[in-house]
Image 1 (cartoon, rainbow, N blue to C red):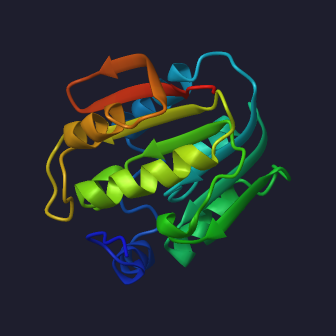
Image 2 (tube, one colour):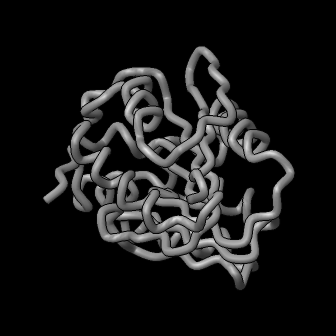
Length: 192
């Protein structure tokens, strides 16, 4: 059983207390980070994107126009409700209430791992990522973006998350961007 530092109850309490607990919709930093993530995808058309930990759906909304299908997932029912409202005008976007450990991105050609990796222990993140990679379509893109600060509910630093992803078999590194507050890396799933 994979363990994370936070539970559905932890996140749900945060979203019930504050509609946008990390200010994803209004923070200049968060919006700059989201724009950097979208830019790091390049110009490719995405057939099926999976976004675990979608929160209130700001990034989901930003990528929706470039995708034929999006599956956005969050552990908080309140976050899912808010993300679904934000993305309601996109019939090809599904927002579901699930744990990251219950998701298998079958045949997705984009996996977004943004601000989620440090909630897992290293071995659990490796196990989760290996299952995700196996389910992805050949040649799929994996893009990760994590904050480089410290938080008491994180089991790992953002750099450690990306080091684990760099060590995953079956991924070819294609792109890196590092700013003072966050880093982005992009990989391609190797084709057999």
